[in-house]
Figure 1 (cartoon, helix red, strand yellow):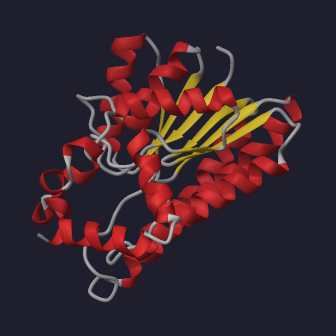
Figure 2 (cartoon, helix red, strand yellow):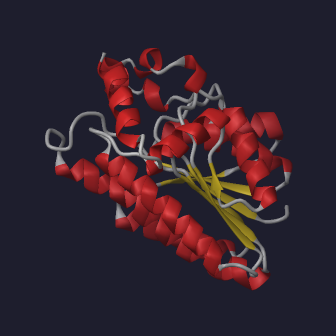
Length: 267
């Protein structure tokens, strides 16, 4: 094996249908013959994914069960990174959404989101970088979102944490220029995964309300992420339509765009 790849996996892993980072990227990394370390909160699904990868690719991923909203669990992963010594790839993909308004939801949920999206990603990146820099190679992928470039009712904290990840990745890559270490902020839009199939999203019927043309497959997202890495692009926004949405969100038309999106989601 060439080295080790550690992947945080997002809420709502779908084992039977390998998808976005817990899948497409795992497949690509397996193809490059890395030892895999999979990190997620749900042990049963995590082990099911490891079993699937074993049968499909004849590999034996290491499973680390951790709730990245808990400092103690993050420390456990930091120690594992230190023990690995040759961590070549770190994918910070753990994350979740919180439907509803900021006022009606418990504050603790938003603090957990900040911990998982921001604090865990920063701490694990900090733990991984010394050995990457020393060896002159390594890749960190922070899974952000096109929400990083937008704001909207009900997504205040989600968009803010994704904006942090995007800016953090861009600034970190500038700091690491010449070291051989690559950093990417992957900013997908609506992607066919289990993320929006979780029970908390059922009342919102998002998959029915969002135009089909705006959805991408996980394979498409992964393919464009890897292509951007090879080209040295730090910010990767997969899909032409998503790049158009981001361009509009950065223009004077942003209020109109957000009003249209809000109207679409409420109807």
